[in-house]
Amino acid sequence: MPDTHEIAGLIEAALPGSEVTVHDMAGGDHLYAHVRAAQFEGLSLLEQHRLVNEAVGELLGPGRPIHALKIKTEVAS
Amino acid sequence: MIATEDQIREEILDAISQHRIMLFMKGSPEMPRCGFSAQVVTLLKENGAEFAAMDILPDPRIRQVLSEQSGWPTIPQLFVNGELVGGCDIVTELAEEGKLREMVAA
Image (cartoon, rainbow over all chains, first blue to last red; front, side, top):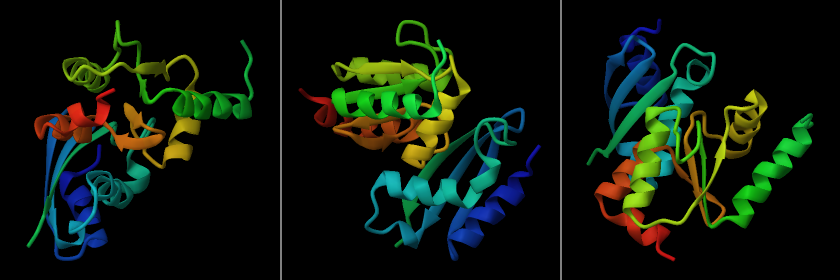
């Protein structure tokens, strides 16, 4: 089961300076990530979510530790 | 039915190009097999969208090939005008902002 701090750390490493909160929604494999980052400026929602998905990378998907990652992004000013 | 990976890829790409609003989901719109897929179906219907759907569950390669093509790791995946819009979170956010209705308007 992935650690929520570990996931938050991966996202923070990919988006330096971002504020990340990760919660467990159900049983450890459905997670919620709230990410506030300056890097989102000017990007579409799809592109913002892609950056977060890519940060979590190999941990997310079928047969991987995280089944679902709910993402909420916010542009930091 | 025995399909090669290339045939699956062709079927996916055809579906995306032939249907203006194309949803890849778990189960069918009548009987979704996952809460996230069910939510996108509900939002599309609420916003008056006429959409086509493909169930990714019958063959694990459908999902694998789809994610390779789209670069998106999870299901559901909504395409409008041949382009990926996103998964459940993005569709939900667009619906809340009233943008989904514009996007799916015929």
